[in-house]
Image 1 (cartoon, helix red, strand yellow):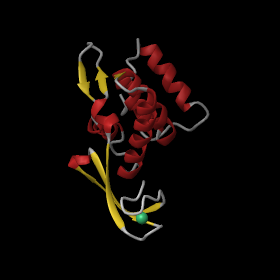
Image 2: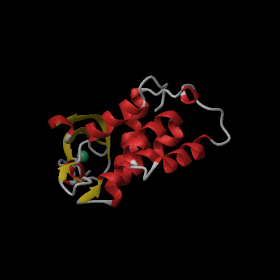
Image 3: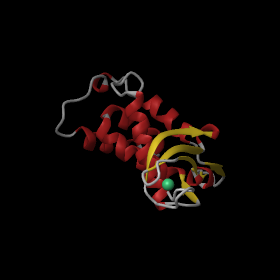
Image 4: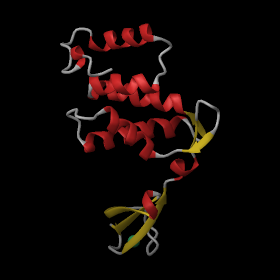
Length: 164
Ligand SMILES: [Zn+2]
């Protein structure tokens, strides 16, 4: 960031916090050239601009809360922390905003989320995938479950029909 006092582009961020309900990031900066402090605002445009195309063709604004709610449901009683979920959503957003700048299919979001959830918690992944991937029939679903669990001991609950 160019310093408004001495015009040097050499500063360090002292403090960052989100404002406007998470739509902007306010950064307090200190110029390493002249030592003066100034504030910048970064607006999270990708978040406000991206529309999600639902299966019925309707469009809704992208909302991080929707993804988090789905993940929390999938991770119910699983050893996954809120911090891990937040981190996962940040990775998902980074991937989505890099590739899509106007609209993205809801199924694509589901795919990107599922891909990352797979390495975090397998039971949560299967729960999530069963909702978001719209398996054509039960065989597809069971194939997916087998792929995930292959070579690993069945997670707790899976053998007892609790998952379904
Ligand atoms: Zn300066």
